[in-house]
Image (cartoon, rainbow, N blue to C red; front, side, top):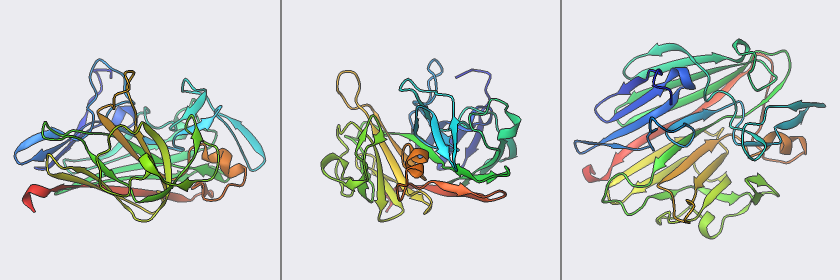
Length: 313
């Protein structure tokens, strides 16, 4: 991460968030106060390493992968720049762009981005984005909206990509992730190969158990509720992740390292659509979550993170 970037801090006595407006409003750190001591909730970004494997970032105007960076929409074919080793276009093009700050206070931050200001923006339609963060006691609200400022219909999607730590302190054996999702997509290299199937075994995250070493990088759907829970029994903390109804899919990324051991994070990614969604929508798949924005239409949603200290209950 370039040292010249300046962070804006949102803070109260329970939560502290460092945001990088010049770099996609990237979350550099997110800390929570537990009984007088501060702990990192997300994997913090080390100065000597690149981003996108730490902290948290936004994904828009699509999330996850587009196969070969190409898709068809309303009879036309569009080619995006491929930006990942697997020859896909991944996670949109707002996560490293400079955003224009509109509000920057201790408990509220708002910024906007207009794709027309970037001749190299990796999407062929004109869009405006609005991002808002707001702190209130033990809650952090995170919102992202898209406005179609083009003259044609535009397919879009969005999401968030936080890397949660699996251990807040030495007391934590592991984290529990409770995801109310009944179905998961079969896939090959993260690209769906068929309709979503019932969760089973390591993909069934509906019940309390330690996450373990499942080696997940899966897209879930058929949500039966809007609350995702991360439970740290050792630290006696729960993170409640309440998502708007537009987030019809959630990606869980809990990988292994080169030695086969579980890495010390889990990415819990609320997203509005399935991986490779534009292409699956063009093929007539149902329930992709792809949103078609009409000219002038404004659309988006909010996620709310709440920190529950079980010790105080």
